[in-house]
Length: 508
Image 1: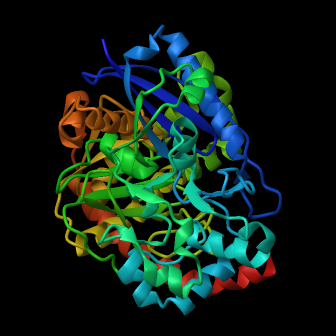
Image 2: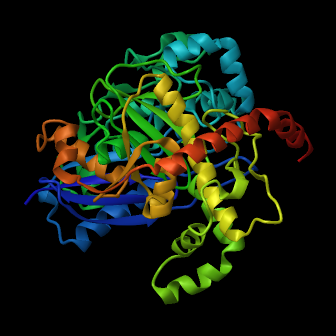
Image 3: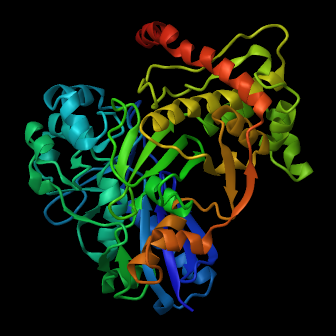
């Protein structure tokens, strides 16, 4: 028996997923670690705590399933995108990592688009300058902590740092590098144009490595700490969304997926790079060699449903356990009693601003059309529909860029709601599909390891070995017609409210 391990270095925990070389999921183990916010809008983590969490998760999964470490044939890593780790010439961490959801770099984003130019930035990096990306964090360090910037010898991302601790090799994997804003995405090389214009030294950028390419092997020191066998191959891995796409089988033209987690992601595979529509949708290198993906992001997808549960679903939360279910199921059942369109109630899911298509941190959520005739059931359904309308914003951009598929695979906690999938299918006019596996990016990371060590020929073969479509939900044509009309109202609300969003941001 041979095994593969996928390490998912997330924002709140690391998860070690164990599968066989034939693609059968054995199980997983995880370890949480803290998140720090030293100032409002700042989010940081200590790379050493991420490393210790990884060590613990690896030991847990090996012990839990009584795995002989010599039977582990390969390891892959997935990690939170954009989060920067700054290392000195000895490979030591200089300061805490600045994370993807840190918002301190608004000024630096403006500076990047001014200095590089928006058109040049899109030509090179295929993305606009946003606070979450890595390049603004580097400029922030240079401007605000010059004594730390002077020490920087290497810039890496969190999963690349963990791989460095495992192998002793300092490299950055391509699909994650695409999220730094420092990569020429089409040509798959570091952008000397961007680096030179920003006055940043090229020397801080490590060697690039492919997702399924072997980037190093477990060192004797790492073996002693983790319980892994020395010499075990470790592949480049991938960004969390790229690995999630591999784990959902989004590895060929026409395939696309929706991830319904705290945030929402709509992602489509590309065989050839296509510039996004003015930067309103992202394009990155895929974990599939020489392929790409487009991606729209909704910042508050499951978060919107969770917000309602936390503040107005106390009863459902209290009784769910005794009924052997969860509060979301109870709330969805209630929402089924509301008709499509929620009797004219529209929810704007901008609880934490919005990424696609507006790129507006000042945008805020709200209900439009609320009347005395509306009840809880209508509010819940409007939330599910509002997230669906936000996904339609992304779908329109994908289709403008050339995507022509007729179905999407759905993963994440929200995909457990049959009603939500019916609403999504009907708003988007696409078939929704669920899968037998919903282990997230860890599956993709493990499958990439399998490709790297020769267990699979490519990510397509790897994903087909493990994935099956378990259910399909087709659009309700009557609902679809209603939703197309409501969507016209929905998409007119943001431009109408934009001046008020900005005004309120100055007040509060």
